[in-house]
Length: 113
Image (cartoon, rainbow, N blue to C red):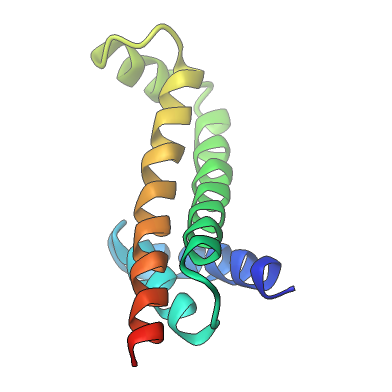
């Protein structure tokens, strides 16, 4: 229950934070949520990863479908990727890693204190 709640909270708060701050605000949100929810470091990493990955996937798809995949196709060509879907997958993976690592750090801080 804590896991699912933290994933949803990270995704929602990341969406709000990115409207007002820079992209790296997802790391701050994941860290703070992991500090408040007492979970093992592995579960905390997974909740941060899933929360941010879900948010970035939804955000990427919403922006990408509006402009008919023009920007993601051009970025995939720039990075020599075979398709725009792979570019979106790499973007989601990077965002998930940022969220997961910051949530893991928050869990370890909580454990230490």
